[in-house]
Image (cartoon, rainbow, N blue to C red; front, top):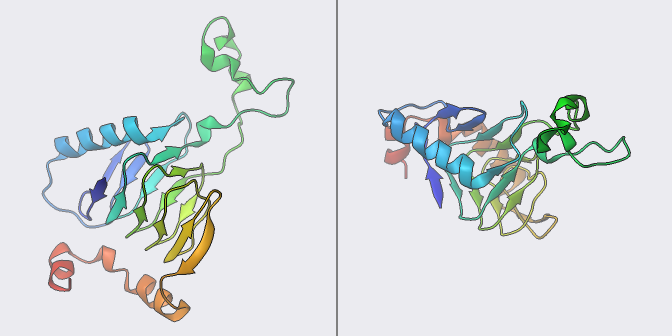
Length: 182
């Protein structure tokens, strides 16, 4: 399971971890960790879209983030991505430009993603969400979802408490303040 606290902000390529806090973590370890995560957990990341993961997220083994590069043209006689298969088709880059895009994929702060979950392109996962094993769509703040496709099981807190938690934004606090209030 990948557990990344605040202060481990990484922005390598188009995968970003962490929040606004910073600490003295070894940058080379972070680079290696980010590359390992990208290799193991992020697929079809060919375009300008970004994967943004908030602070204090627990991401279980087998979680896959599918990026917009997995999309195919649907306005021609074939959906096959000829240009990315190399010569002689590599000259036809026009067939893979302007592919459908759902935008950046964002995981809020304080999110727990269960094992073998598939996150589709452009999904927005709210702060404090818990996601059981399955493919998911957008998840509201502090929601528990499950199934494939995901459906809302319940909210973790009342609407008033959710608003208060989001306003509080504890994940942006300095690490020592968080530690004091555990």
